[in-house]
Amino acid sequence: MNSHATSHRGIGPEPHPFPGARPTTDGTARRTLLRTALTGAAALGAGLAATGTATADPGTAAPRPGTPDEALRELAAGNRRWRTYRERHPHENPAVRRTLATSQHPFAVVLGCIDSRVPPELVFDQGLGDLMTVRTAGEVLDEAVLGSVAYGVLELGIPLVVVLGHQSCGAVRAAVAAEQSGEHLPAHMQYLVDQIRPAIDHGKEGDARIDATVSANVRLVRSRLAAEPELAARTATGKLAVVGARYELTTQAVNRLA
Image (cartoon, rainbow, N blue to C red):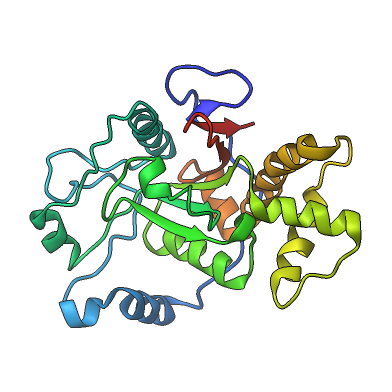
């Protein structure tokens, strides 16, 4: 991913640890039960890797990214392929599918928007077993999202969490419009507005406000994730990075946000 401040080749230095994470397990027994329930390990007779150590990529000889910096570089390389129309659509062959029936070793969690134009596996040109993706409108957090991210990091040892916003986000636009009009959105959509509202940039107007709020919202969500105690403990040891980025629909580039 490119730096949003200064575009450069590659991913740049590994990000500094962020403060913050939430306890998600109550001991070995519950941890084992959760792992079994979510992966089918009991039925398949295979467990999941729970470390960040690079492992053999299913179906290939290439090692899996095992550190935050390696994971960032892999995502940057994939996005370069995507935006230059050189996609590989990796890890979809029969051998990979058979291997993934018994285990998975994703190297990044991507919390992105539900927008149909921003599927993380395509934007980063990754395949089966590469990414654990969580998608909500405007990357909004709730307990299910927090638990899903924590599962990927704490149970699977994933070294990187990316909060991925995008240009022209409809959820952000709706939040800005609702604040300006005072309208209360129907059903559960008001929850989205309430969560995005603190990120609204009142220093700008019109489309500029929406665009600035997209970035501000990514930073806010990233900070909230980074403030989770167990995630913070891993960032402090260099085992995890929580970063923010945004996807530009007009260029197909992912730019990292400082």
